[in-house]
Length: 597
Image 1 (cartoon, one colour):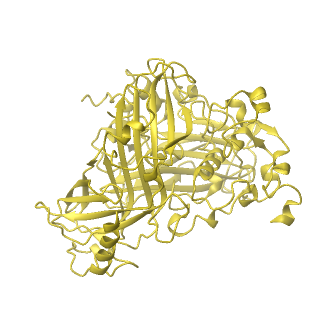
Image 2: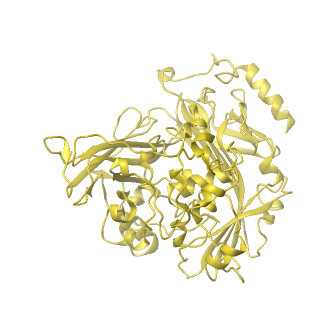
Image 3: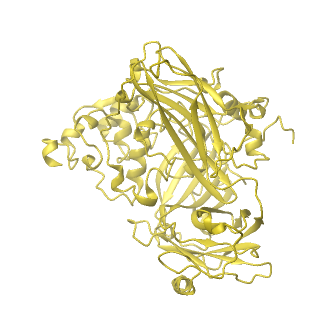
């Protein structure tokens, strides 16, 4: 393959005995932690006991386990399971084809129903459009189930007691559930819709079913993979006749350690008082490191996009990959998007949701930094920088002759502070993801700079407390982007012309309204909104979090719903009423708000 040419992106590539098994595993002592004693017979390499346990991520696609190379003697806990079954068809059959064809054909599909639908806003290269339909409530999706992971040698002999993890059910989490995120779904993709609202006559479909389990709730349940193991086997209690095989190789002395961190440093020195002047250019540099602090790239440069996607990518650095493995908020694999990007936003006391829509042209132009928000339009200033630069990253996807995917990627860039920047504390954030030898983890870092004043300022967040649910292994500093500083979210999460659901407020509403594991009543806005002021800017995007239909008066005024996220179009982010929060039954914000809390 020509290293200066990237591959062309495609949207998608073409029971009770388990409970007894779990009891046997705990009794045999093959797993550390609350459900078993440590095994004293497991062979480890020198110093392995000093290593922190690593979260293991496994993937099975259409019945085939993706190979793992691991460090010999490393201690793991099972942190992520991704399974997928798919079938290509020429008939519009929803996802019913999956009930009799493919890897999940033996599952119980009764009860399946269509719950959401969304078109991809950008046209395909042939000027057609893509529609996604999302299905839930199949019996297998709602059922509680377990997975058993076993180690075996080249002759198929079991080398250790099985590790059995509980996937839980669709209802509220229980203490014995092993994963914070549990999403079992089916999706129908239609690739040749003639418009962005009409798929009549379409003939190119893919039906897929997904199992997404991640963020271990019991990372103390650790194990070491025996150095004699040539493969792991995975068995699922809902599909017990299928045994999935994952090839394993062991690295004696790998070039890097597990773990991931990113240093974020200003290259431009501040003034004598420690501040930067409005109108200044401030350059920042990042350094990606493994868990022992070793550099993952030479100083000055990061790998090209081609080197990351096609290889070699020995260090496990990741860039945006949704060209090949498309992601969808809540419904499909957002953890695998793997965007490496930075933002600046400020001043902190003015931070709020960004509602200005960023067009695709801004990503394809010559600027490597995009201005996302201005004080005049959004009440706050924000820029972001995608790595590789947006024009190289997206230009390479849309133009077969584009050489952006083969260009060197610098490890520094420059933000421009506006000439009339409001004084205060500005937040600069970097977020990314690394996949290395079975580990798939995020990392974020936020630093502060002072602009125009040495006086530190803080944000006035009027929603929360997220820690009601996000605690311990599911804390915001562990899941998602591993970022527990919510002030730093708004700059990256802005509405894009090709992805209107970008704002953090839209995604937060949507995810929590779709999850059956969110405990609070959806109508009770005061569960998360801390002040009356915080909900006075009601928009259609907020309403669509819970409502999937409009009353006739809304249809007459705004038209029918076209987007499951925001309603119709760009006007959806503008405030459409000042009364919903005062007359919405059960909101907790109707009248006398403070006295009701």
